[in-house]
Length: 152
View 1: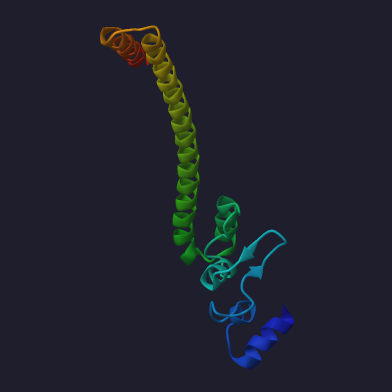
View 2 (view 1 turned 45 degrees about the vertical axis):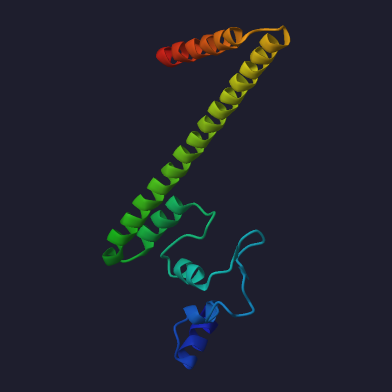
């Protein structure tokens, strides 16, 4: 750290510029943070180094909580807002995941019902059923759907 600060002082630049490339065209991008995490956006890397935002895939709540403990009081209001946003984003991700799971279940159930209806209509037609027989199958399924919605 001493050497980093000395170089920054001698070069008359902020230390952060010794840790990040100057622009996105730099050949050193992406920058490996760990064996599994690499950053290919200089702005994102700079915001992380300044303690302004977590890296993707990291625990944003932990990041902002630690930042709140380390930053001066003047920045704590902004960090509290970021923590709130991170908590809300986490909750939104959870709800989106739950919604997607529910939608997948509903789609699978609807597909199964449609396939069953097609099979019933095919069976009615295969046995020489009339248009009235097909309509009876459709009415029966419609009644089952209405009953299912009323009990749900």
